[in-house]
Image (cartoon, rainbow, N blue to C red; front, side, top):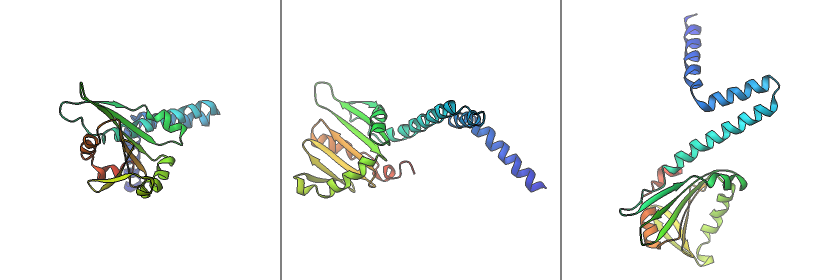
Length: 185
């Protein structure tokens, strides 16, 4: 009897803590709409919950974008999500790095997109397509046509483009690739 009381108390406490979560509230609303026969609203709530979850993942991915080098600025954009939705989904974040009167470049991170897996073959045959391979920590990066591209854990694409290769490599070295490989797990 005490065991049942403790379990029901734990469930009640867990549910009240979770109900403060906007995602959980939205999912609960979708279930209620479905139970009421309002499938259209249930689908709208599910889509909204999906957007909230993607926003959470995007925020986590943004944390892996390097800080700007001293004397530079960094402007983060999380607008990649709309483009990724048309390419099969996933999570993306991008930052533009600028130094007044000098170059600028962008670094983008794209995770769990079906097209990212296709990059593995290209990176594996980089020499055959005339690209150079450079190590950034333990990661192999392909350098071609002014772009640096790497594939982390066969599912996270890292790209830097638009600036001086040495400067971009220097900034890419500040990413915690081990932690990035665990993103979303």
